[in-house]
Image (cartoon, rainbow, N blue to C red):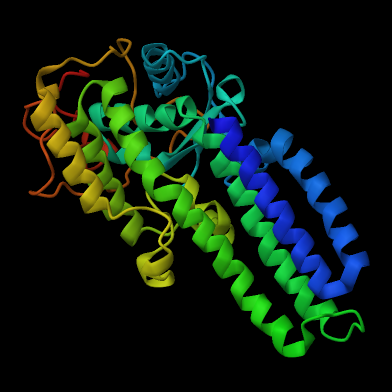
Length: 347
């Protein structure tokens, strides 16, 4: 089903390219657009994951990393029945994460440094499980292809503005060209919105099953939403077509129209997870991962060492859901204070 949806999306985008090419340059413009779309389809299928990871400055992590992240992903991937994805870390203060790749055999999970230092181990497990659910559902191919095509549609609109208005074969005229310049990116936003909403709910539910507790993911979503609202993600702002790939929209709320929001409302997602927890009694289940002795969650000894030290983390909110029936974890406000993460089932 995942491949069929991806093929349908590629076909629709190719038809859109051909139609716009015809409006801009007649039959010759349509042929050029067809050739361009065909080449972009092939390139996107094989290289889009690498492009997205490069856009966000993601660096690979190896087994045994001091974060313990690779080990956690491996355990949760086995629990999900998936091959081991590649694991990446983005040096970005905003807590967030995404998955990418054309299929489960060529998938990757990327998290930000801000996510690592602001979540408990339980919450991080919920986030990783959510991203693995996207991989298992074959959402990553659709998300990555959509991101690439959305950027290309905006590029095509700019091309029409600069080169289409004075052409004799232009079927739209200057008014039509200007209208397309604004409507084409809007259409891309509608495609992203339609794909994202049901996909996120499905990944939340499957992620809760993979990690073993819906409340872990619910708590993580609340924490990430607060961080995303007040911390800039400059790479995402520079590449807004990739916003729908993240677990929480990385773009600030005041910079986007809610009509074209790429994610369901976070409070609705949290409510659905809390309802799932109440119905299934997940709160008493144990996680599948037990971290190695000596894991340093602050990242000491890695290429990002020192960048976490002395930084404030996002404060706990009294409304934040408890994790696995335990009190909310006590967070390390500053690394030099030598305070631990607090007691929890991941300890």
